[in-house]
Image 1 (spheres, rainbow over the protein chains, first blue to last red):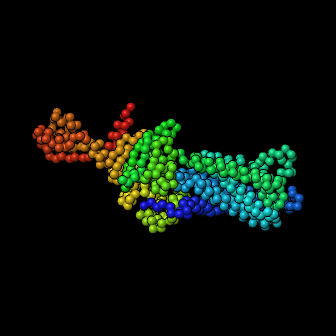
Image 2: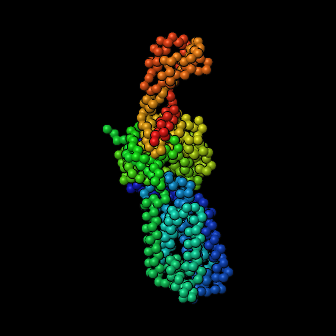
Image 3: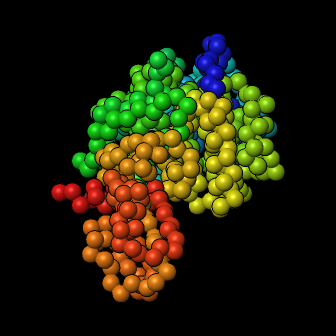
Length: 262
Length: 308
């Protein structure tokens, strides 16, 4: 009765299928996964664009709205890439349906690629929508489009890996929420989304350089506005190294089926 | 000579130092329906989970049609379909979507005719576009069998497929499993319903406390291990049981009109009849009955429990 795979396409069919399933999963609840984050970002845009944005300037030559928008786009990408894989994989573990995947020939490479790509797609989709909406609130330059796209892709990739790590390590919903509330949110808010690090007192500015998200946010802002606290090469390099470290960590967990098989 | 459908050699698994499966070895031939029986916690599901790849193997090996299920896991998993004991569903998707996804996970192009056949044969047609959460318990069980079969596995593993389902569905599932077997699939079945094992399985293994304590064809197990009962009805009441019958495990009932015998496996009714004639008992009728697999199962597991 059994059919053997007859081509590379069939060998990769498990990956396409898992990717398709993960994409359809977030599209099925688009009101939670796409609309809600866009509304949240739009509220920020309204506050910083329509109300305060034109009255404050923290970087010469740019309104506060223009300054804050790259950070808000990146925040949407980060939160949604992380949430997509973290909630999907954790729910599969929690409800036990992860065994449905464990008995199939899906390889660890296919597993991690499918979850990562679906998470990246959701994160980038939210980022794109936020960017389009932000154009209603401020004239937004795009100084280095390819550099912006590269940084956005790196951000979504990095936080997809972090989502895998969180989903595997979390024991319950509380511990999963801790990754968001105690790690991601503080790093984002202290990473320069709402203010340039250069206006901080030297001690706090120095401390901010230890925040990995500072490099991500600053690099993305540089790519969009053409100005930043750091050089793009430094930001890109630091973010790439972070992405690699988290990828190796996540890949090791999945390759060893850590907490996925008993 | 064809390769065994499943070959398990010296398989062991411990949880926190407690053996769940203890050095078991068995082979299942292609085309067999093989029953794995045992009380709760015997190690049946752990064994199945190790075959399917859900549980890691501590020591020993598992081969599916000659392929090692760790080294060649992609090959073996394509050949194995597992219906888990627990109802495992993804509430996001419908039956139809989930079956398509599962075919894809196994690298099998969607075979519409086969999918349609599974859906119809298992009575899932009216529920095809319902999300899982809206299905009844019985429907979820049917769906899980369809899911295990969607990639046309050569070895189908059913971990208590009829647990908690009504009699009608149980019979439907039995018929379907036998049909699948007749079409060439090998089946490994665990069950608590001994009637199910007796009716379906060609061979049976019994596990207890992680050990394999019996393995034989169903017929041989029933023949060798099963004590047979004999009930002799008499025309006239007896006051006492004749002394000569006591070594045969005979008891006289309260009316004095019936004598019950429990024949050990090595004695036959034919051995007893001359003695009954010799005693000039006025025999009205004789009833015989074979011990069920349930009685054998209880006997074997109790014997195993009483071992030091």
